[in-house]
Every structure is written in structure tokens, then in C-alpha cells.
Length: 141
Image 1: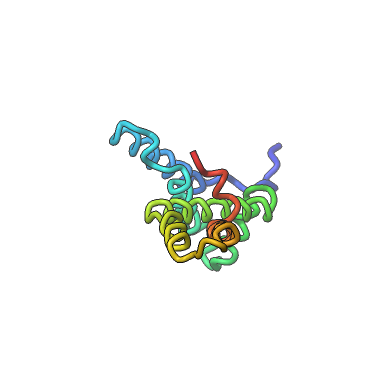
Image 2: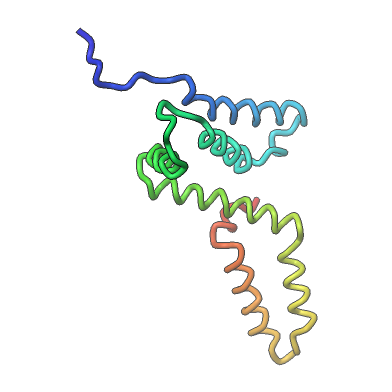
């Protein structure tokens, strides 16, 4: 006798994982370098695909989908930290590509008077650290 209390699995739930694998592997094969596609970008795109999917309940709101997405990691706060980490990584890559840290540092050093150089560099470091977040240090290579 079978127990029918458990919900049946659905292939649609694997679509974000398949999308992630195809995106990451194909970009690595095409460019012949797997470092060209950042993992954070591929994860964000797969997460967008997961949130865009229609599940069994067609009346789900975006908030319901986010709750299910966060509970998927086993704990809502854990996946929320992961999403924040992914967004901080995206912000890091954007600021790195536009050379924002070097620009702010050069502007500060150009206009700071000599007696205020040490406190000025400290304040500039605080501004840059606040803008980029503490998780930027984890993303550096």
C-alpha cells in the first residue's frame, strides 16, 4: 500500500538548475575559459528564472514565491543572507569595472590638505567600505 500524503515531484522545479548548468557550461565552452562567466551572475539569472516560473498554484503572488524561495534553503534568514551576498557581489563587480574606488581615492587625495591627510584617508576608507559593504573582501581574487 502506497502513502499518497507526499506531494508528487514536478520536472518544472529542475528548470532553474538546468538553466544555470547550460548557461555556465556553454559560456565556458564558447569562450574556452570558465572564469569569463561569474558564478554570481549565473546564480542571479537562475534565481530570476525560478521566480518567473508558474507553479501548481497559478494565483501565487510574488511575495508567496519569495517565501517559498527563501524556505527552499531550509531557513528563511539563510537564503536571505545569500541573496544579499549575491547582490553585494554584483555591486562589487560594477564598481570595479567603472573604477569607482580609484576615482574616489584620487579625488579625495587631490583636494585634501596635507595636515588632514591621515584623517581624510580614514574617512575616504570609511565611505568606500560603507558603499561596497563588508562582503566585498570575500569576493576579491
